[in-house]
Length: 453
Image: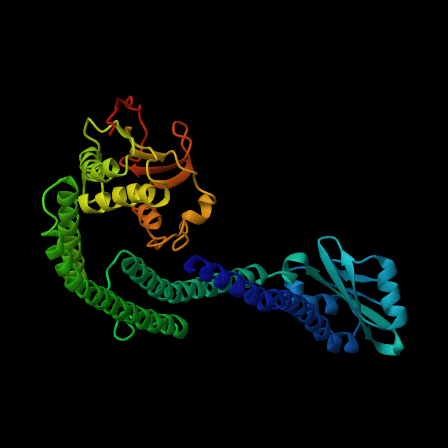
């Protein structure tokens, strides 16, 4: 914007300067020309009294010598007797025309012009006074005047550029402050505001000032909405404590066994997740601790697969885990990855019949970690709809948000979530790709470790 304003100022000032200076320069040139011929007319008129008194050549010669043009040998007198006093440069035909018509005019002469001025002498006869005007006299001072006018034009352009640059600098500074505040707000700094008063806001145009007011109002509204959302999440989560307490008491009466232990473990984990939600909702952005984010994806997947294995055994589901033997670090929190794996495995148990086999494969590369969850079920009728928030495969107890949560986790690392058909089991396959490094690299060979129920 600043450079655009400078270019506009240069263009506008240049056009205005040319509109005034070109006619002014031509007028200066014409004025110099008129001044030279006016001076020649005065020199010719100065000889009129002498010619009216006498036509003696010696007397006329003395009169010529007394004039400025005569001293520079630029004047001559053509007497009626065809005698010539001085240095003539005009041709005889022009002189005869001036005498015969008794009118003055200028003709071209070598190196300039000649002014022919007829003068009536005794007896009604006509003498012609010739004054020579060199070409240099017609342009004397014109070059200097044009140079001065050019310097004035350049000074006007420079001043306009300086003014436009200062004005553009203020506008650009205000726009940059607004853009920086928008980026800071987008990065999570909810306390950022754009100054609308004081020294920093001085010089800002009214439009940018109004935009700053609107931005500050929007930021205040975002803070208010986030606070209300945290309160709502905390209140809703707190309401779950009562049914969770009842459920925990009921699990105590289930007795012993793998199913009872798995149920109690699930209830305890659910209670921990609810507590974590309440703490996170009550925490303000300024209280959020800065911790290193990252976990071992292979370890988390082994743990969650072991958790779901009890339910798979109860439902007679054959399953297998492959590629989770070695470490696979990913830049996500352990709890978030565990929730994503639970969503992928829970999707299998929720939308396939009892006894349907499933598999979990882990593939680690130099730039990403890929988790494949496949089953032998019917697959996805509409994979694109399954990934849209709130439009999952449906069914009782399904909100359609599980795959959307997994997708957002993948996209937060630069990865993605893809749905397709399993090449091994023939049913649905979900491919979760977590990006770990921007550059690719050789793929670690997939080692398969089969665990069947």
